[in-house]
Amino acid sequence: MIRELEVIDQKLIKCNQCPRLADWRESVTERKSYKNQKYWRKPVPGFGPKDARLIIIGLAPGAHGANRTGRIFTGDSSGDWLFIALYNAKLARIPTSVSKDDGQELSDTRITCAVHCAPPENKPTTEEIANCATWLELEIAAVLPTARAFLALGAIAWKSTLLALSAIGEEMPRKRPNFGHGANFKFQGSDGNNRMVIGSYHPSQQNTFTGKLTRSQLDSVVRKAGRFAHARPL
Image (cartoon, rainbow, N blue to C red):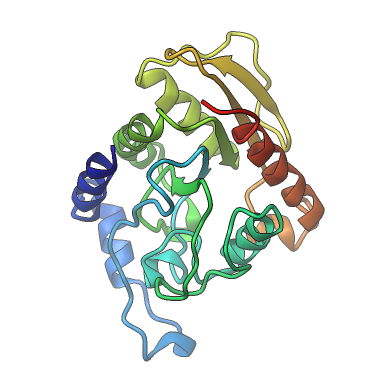
């Protein structure tokens, strides 16, 4: 399984399937505050242990966050919010994530995204989301033996997660809630293990600045997902 994920990540980094995204990630203008840093400018792979119990799915790398640092949810305000919540839930070693060499480690948690390249205005097209779906399917299939909970950050991540689980052979319940903050449902996996999908508003500035998502709300869903993931041995 570990080797399989390493191969997936290596192939992912070389992907150029979406011309618009490839052009954008490679040509985005550096901010003056980062002028002495070399931007990553490639697809961003998942981050966290290969045998994680909790899988967190975001939307896409930020132009000056993961597209700069090369690590998902690292170097921008969305990552600041997420990693504080993970730290509060004892799922992250430190409460910040600023660079690939900052010493951050996740405990039984892996973070990935629906789209692995930074999109203009943080808005990937329907076609780009579909193109990237294969990578999410491969990653989820690789971690499924240990995965117990899936936390989807935003409506696109929620839909992409459900489609990926279905694509790899997991049967999603017909009666399940629509996306919303805290929306969740449980299902029995094809291997007999009970699993859960839970939704959260994305910790983007659009949601955090307006108060649509508060720190206590994000803490709550992260803790709930973490508790379920560790409820009992697989």
